[in-house]
Image (cartoon, rainbow, N blue to C red; front, top):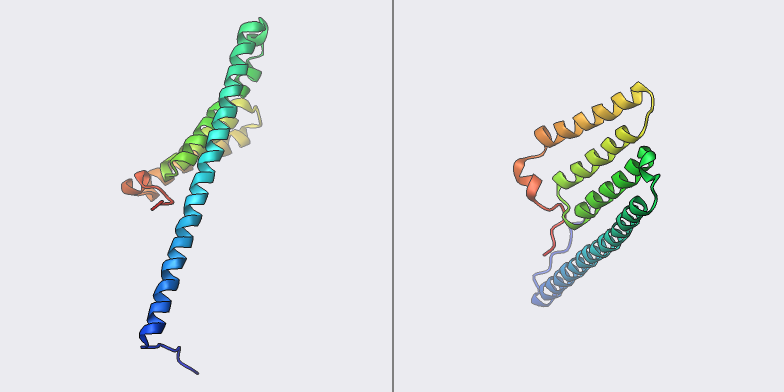
Length: 151
């Protein structure tokens, strides 16, 4: 069994330090690129949501029978709300925001679907579980911290 080689040579130590610095810079660059791409996707999603909201408002004004189909209206408007929560999560990735997006998405499903009672019970149980996770498993300090820190 051989021991790892630890050189005391200053040249080797200097090379190792340069490699560590380069690795940190590359990691920092990748984190910045990922963060910028998340913001870009958030901006595109926000533009699409604003366009969808504008289209919904236009249809509300121009089609007199729009409000007769409340299910369709709720489906479209709640999809926009879930999308806005998703954009908020992309911009500020905290455990609290992630739990809120999941809560809104599950709540939207409960409101819009008229499944059997067991499906509704499962959704309500999931929401209760999300609240329990937020209350008991996530420390208060972590609720405000970003999951991915950008240096």
